[in-house]
Length: 371
Image 1 (cartoon, rainbow, N blue to C red):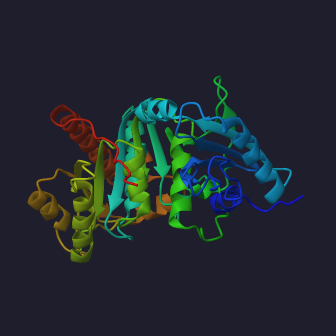
Image 2: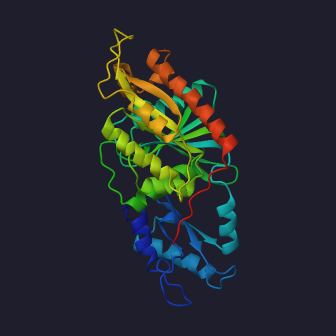
């Protein structure tokens, strides 16, 4: 029995052997199936097969051909569920909300790595949960997942649950009142994730659309640093309520933060920037909490927010306990400390920013993909 791991490229290469009887071209070449139409769960593959006409005479035979090709070219143990999709069905699915039970979707972003974006994302999520909100947090950094470590759940296993309607969904892991998911739960934590952009985007879509997120007041996405395919996948999949940009006071970080802000504000993207969090704003020794040393510059994030007309959500000090708590799997926002209260303050500012945004701007629309 062939136990070669299943991945999108292997499935598409296999489906290229299946030809549409009407013209002899293969179904991948015709655009009837792509990486976005695949869902992989172990040795089970769910495939959406698109047809141009509401009634296609070859639909039933093509479904059987696809099932047969997977068993013939990959292995007889491969199970396939092939769902024909016709124009009316596609339009209806397009109109349906991706996360119908989620009230606010907020992306946590940064222009560059090393500014503490994931630390801010984790602690904002915990702070919001402490404030009484229902919160979900998705680690969208496919190539550098860190949230399993920060929540102390690196060795946790994720499971699929079957819903009353027959759907099988990934069950998020709950810690500190936050529903969490990360690609880090699904890959070897000691190995690098060597995926092409399309494979990473497809994995991210599965974590978004095939998880049992339920009803949430806030769904936070910890994006990778910079701008990439992952960012495009997010704005093409979800109608973001807004974005939070994390920076340090350092000039290099501020320059990259401006680029990140510009990406969200670009006309084709149109995602409101809810505000700026200035991380590592100053260094405070644990033994001298009233002292401040501005080792990365002073109030660079404050000035950035002022110049761009954005809200300053908070300034987080550089305190050893923040990093130590993250390494220990207990976000500092779970504690009643000075550093913890900095994130509580930022969470309150965020909820105010969201309320203002929703009262003054129309809902964000997902970005249409141009073929």
